[in-house]
Image 1: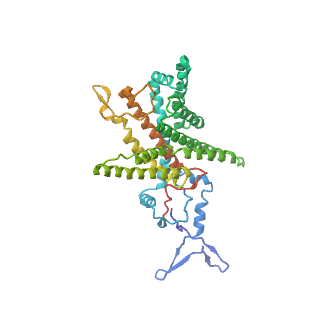
Image 2: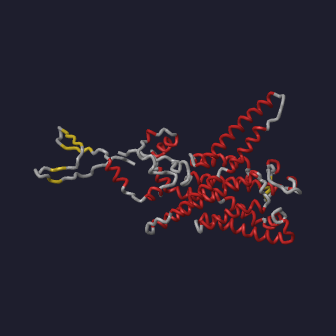
Image 3: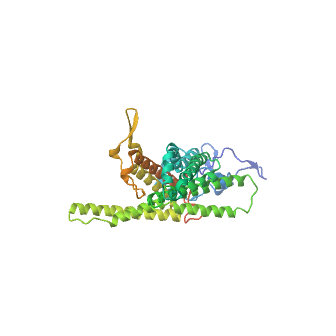
Length: 422
């Protein structure tokens, strides 16, 4: 952090004339005491000496992916007037930001992985508790109904595979065991689930599933690159790594393009609300409709711009962080399943007065009135954890960056805090 060297001793020798010689520096003489004081100025050699302490490029990366110590290293803190820079400077005056990130970085990464797989853990638990009901629902769906008497057997096998894929895959990702296989198992279930439950026409479910798949693909690339970096550091250098790097970059690009799908869907909802205003002769109603039009239009523009920035990789880390926080607030407001239940007389009951039916795809012979309160509660609970996992996917992008194929691949989310220490 500091740029000054403290001279502990003198570098003394003997010249040809027998006089002591010292390292070049500014000399100040105290006439009263007759002593020589040495003032060492900061030179480029001090910077070189500091930089040569870690020639391995991965040494700086181990601090935390949120910070890039190599970025803007010639830029003084006072030259960057951003709000984040000022906050980081004030925080670093009280504690070491790098030390905090080094300690809490792995914990933060675990929390992001937990958010990403939260919907799979919750869905596997609900599936295990109501396995028979799920078999009936899938067996009577359009996907397997044409099989006739064999549909319950096929549904049992496929749901059993899905249960194992979700539970074991989520645990393996949290424990970082066989993460590549676990990630692909979760991606496979995320693709198969809308077809099994006949939810392809449910645009909200499909868009959030695509965003979730994008987050899983980005997590897979990150874990693979982490494993490859460890393998390369322990093996001789090789020039045959261009193929895997290109594949990883393309996979990460596909994942980043899928991430904003859910927000494009919500942008479409705001567009529909903006263009479908009811005609009225009442001034108050007109002003209310006009204000909603302005709000919906602003939300539409913000979501579209944010989705484009995430997809192209321009300021994607910052935008992804804000979208994740907004999505968390929206999920807590739209699907607060924990508010719909309470314990009365030693039993859990559902508060039907404060719970509403969601817009989901239903069969022709099924109406919303056919759902009992507990089924509606399960729907809210499922969409809550699905939105939580979508926020986890965005936080994954904010934490590790957009990848190699991006307009701004070296974006730094938290600026480097550098100040001189005397």
